[in-house]
Length: 225
Length: 310
Image (cartoon, rainbow over all chains, first blue to last red):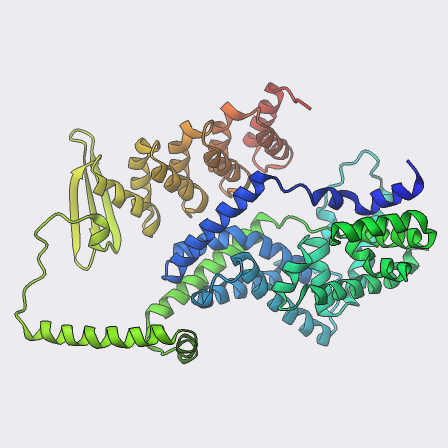
């Protein structure tokens, strides 16, 4: 394979293949899920708490995962989770089906996370360390199983160092840049959806992603030399 | 000019956000431009590096604790809503409605006026006691909660005590549709776990019905009481092979239920479908990580008894 083609293939990677991977089955199940959501939302708007709890169960793992990855703290992630769903419960009457429930709940969560990141930026906390519920420091990389045959302590150490440098580099981003990067890189959302969630345009989301990657590249560049 | 455009859009390219024509144009340019190829390598390396801090699955403990805390907060919020909260006038919400729907506002005023007139006329007329002279549909009774369920195996009769504004009792055959409706209501609308246990126990025999099966799946997924979840599992036993929703719910219970008794029961149910690839995947995880010795060894046994087809 010519070198230039190899670079292109490596750059696009799995995501390049993923663009065509939405099967008819996926679309049918998404449509069914949306229809089911609508019924649950209408019931929740009539005051049916069981229906609201069913909605919560559909989205709460994704919400908690996002909050934990962004805040790096289990207690903070739990607070955001509570506040987001309580807010959704109180305001579900205002939901007008103009966007999906998924976008709506994510809009609430991203706003809360942005507030959290802004507060932390003023307090200048160090989020590279991650706290569990009991306030103990937690190493996320400890929880990644590395069953590869070639895994060795040296590689493990390098992986840890890289992880901690990445966490530091992410703190250099503005809360909005961090959020767009998180939603795109780690959560794999489309920029159009990210724009909707952050009440902005797709174009602005693109520019923010560009700025975020430029900053990360310059912060992490010394590490690669 | 072309290089500037390529560099500005490279991030969109690696995150698969470029339209097909722009993507084609960029790939053509990169093939012939060493500088842009180098830039692409650097941006791709960043994408790869950033994956060293992965998004991990949240721990079951964190999820369970968050859900429990939320449930309490929701209960509290609901009490507030039905208590003093309902007397507090939501001015902002009202303004929103007025702004968005003037026709609705006019209609509400007219309904209010007509309702008031009719009520006054009724109060002025003869007061007759509210006596139900016919056998109403369950949904018309307005059931508030279900108090108890008693079944008599000799007569096939079921006695269900439930509350409306006044407590009422229904005695009817287990096959009576009203009994079925009350039992379905009892599976999720009552806080008394004995009632939920009894209702699931009776509904098990009718799991061929889609509504009943949905109720059993819902109980297995969401009921707080492990006993109820076990009964629901028992009811779903015969449907694992043919109903994919049942299979998913059992698999979910096997992987995430915090009660090892429920997980042990769930693993037994998957015997007929243990060769299924999704089940196999789950069994591999359980064989390594489940805290319960029985589940680990049972998973290993199932894995050993089914050939791995690549």
